[in-house]
Length: 230
Image 1 (cartoon, rainbow, N blue to C red):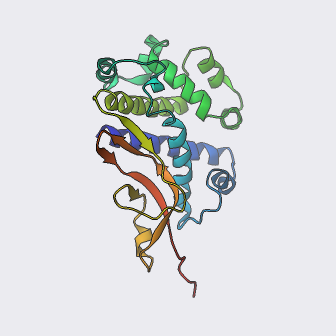
Image 2: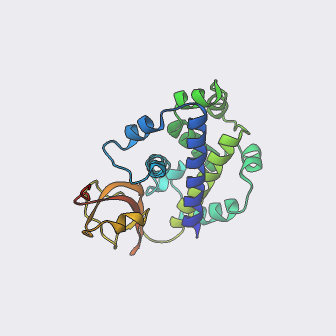
Image 3: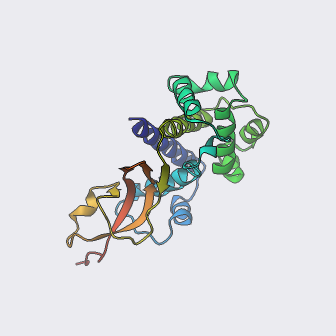
């Protein structure tokens, strides 16, 4: 359930991001190709999966390290963090706790994930970036959606490290054969293609392994042999 909410918050942010890009007259096709070049999308709205793959790659970077939170801590610390943040309203929390570990995590992820050129194209300035850099947090809708995504990913990390189990994260290599053991397709339409053999075009959401438990990665698939055009 924690993973479900994390993924829902990531998709909400991706939708918001694409709307902002469209409003700023971005070339969505060009932006898609800059993330996942050489991929044939079965539907135009599937391009969102490319942006989701980028956001997931950045927001989950370092997830399998205890220092994802900025410091090495013990298991009970992670569970305490989980309990502390699982029900909070993120904006007031950040206002009251700007120097918290979660606040520092959010700052690092924002500065890494949101490029200055992107921010400038959306708002015509870099005010949000300046605020975040100074240890404060904007109250814009964009940052609100971003910080909720960050909170959900933080909760997932804290919960994973609350257990006495090794935590790892994995991406599936491009062109790997589809395996139902380790992968889940983000769309069902692909399975309507004749032939039944599929390869990974790209990983959208990484997979997780906690102890012996495997959570499948979510992948965008292509048929091994593209269907012939009549």
